[in-house]
Each structure stands twice: as structure tokens, then as C-alpha cells.
Image (cartoon, rainbow, N blue to C red):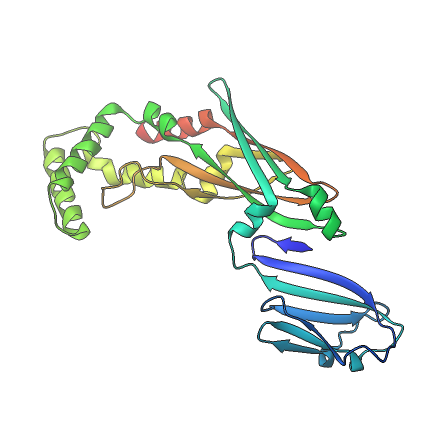
Amino acid sequence: MRIECPQSIQHYSVAFETKGSRILPRKKKFNFGKVRRVSLRPIMSLQPITDAISYTENGFEINLKKLEQGTLYLLDIDYFIEDRRFIDALVNKNVAKESLGDETYEYWMVAQLKHLDVLKQEFRFIELKDLDFSVDVSVYNEIKMKVPSIFRKQLETAVKLLSKHHGGRDEQFKLLVQHQQLLRAQKEKYYGEIFEILEDIQEIFSPLTFGKFVDVQKDFYYFNCERGKDFYETLPFPTWPKSMKVISRTDINFNRPAADGLLMFKKRNLMDEIEKIFQ
């Protein structure tokens, strides 16, 4: 069995040999659920025998009359994985966080096949390809240390202002712009550039840029990252996230039933980039 994790596809490969017998039925049915694709090929030529396979409502069937006696065949079957808990039922995932001073956080990752002895009784080989492993990397404290307090106070004032105004998001946005123009006229620091500053912060937490602040090592490789919830959720525009979800991937199988990985978050580099914006 091979599982293509990103595509949620479960793939089975079965080898069998045909033998002549008067007792065998003309067709062999496989009623294990709706299939995505079935391929039947003799091992020697590997040419698909398409007219021997018929799809049914609950699976498929093989017309044995289309096969030659004394021949070794390879049967490949693909199923869609409908239940998202299926992979979780096969794999244990654990993560542990360690601090390396002011420079870096380390996240140790382990993905391991469950019930290995039982699986080996049922299957000759199992492989999970490109298994996703998500780590929530907290970034709020690092941001808090580098975003000037006066800038945070101005945003918090805006949150209070908008919470008292029950109009739509467009009306709230117009109200905030008017408030910004008023404070700009009073020469309040940062308010003339609030949206430009927030736009620069957004760029830091885009997947392309934030990926530069993480390093994935050992049995895992970096795949992508996603923004977590915004710290100021009531504002009609994004500010900065509380955390970033970093997605790494790995392969595990009977030969390597456990994968060890290390995710390094370069928090000092992130803080330096945020500091540059306010300078």
C-alpha cells in the first residue's frame, strides 16, 4: 500500500498468478468501495489489459476469461481517501520546542507509523509519500518586542473606535481613514504611514518571505507556510499574525517507520526585518 498524502490517494499493488480451474467463476469481484483507477498488466509485457476490468457501483470486477493461464499479473488499484482521520490513524506525530538563546527556536519533529507489527502482518510493504507535518510557530512576542509601543497604541485606539461603530467593513474602513487623517493633521507619529507600514509587515508574513526565516533539516523538507489568526481580528484589514503554520513533508515506510526532523525558526532575523520597517 502506498499513500500519496497531498492528493489523498490510497494505492494498492497486488501480484497474482492465474491457474486453470473449472471451479473458478468467470469474474472476480472486489467490493471495497468506489475506486479512482484500476490497472491490470502482465508482469512480462506491462501492457495494460483494459477490457478485463469493469467498474461497479461499489468497486470493480475482473473478467478472468480475458486472462491467460499460468501468467503473473500486477493489479494496481487507487482509492480516494474520504476520511481525513485515515492518515492520523496510521501515523503518530509529535513536536517539541527548545530555545537557543535570543537567536533561534528549535522544533523537533517525529512522525512514526502506529501498530507496525500489525501492519506487517497484513501488508508486505507500506509507504506514505509527502506526509504533511504542521508546526505552529508563535511570532507574536518577537513582533511585540520590535513594534513601537506608540504604534500599537494607535492600532488599539482604532480597534476601540471601530468596535463602537456597527456599520459594515467598508464603513469601518472609511471611519478609520478619517481618524488617521485627523491624527496626521495633529502630527502624530506613524499615522501618516500606517497603511504603508502594515503593507510592509504583510510582506514579511507572506509564504515566500517568511520561508527565509525557517530552516528544515534531517528527514523532513520545507514545503510551505500559512498565516495564523490575526492579532487584531476586529480590524477591517490585516495587521500581523499571532503565529505562522509551517508545513514540512517527509516519507515513512516499513524500511524507515519513523522520521526525525528539525525546524529552526530564526527569530532574530525576523525581529531585525521588523525593526527596519520602523526605522
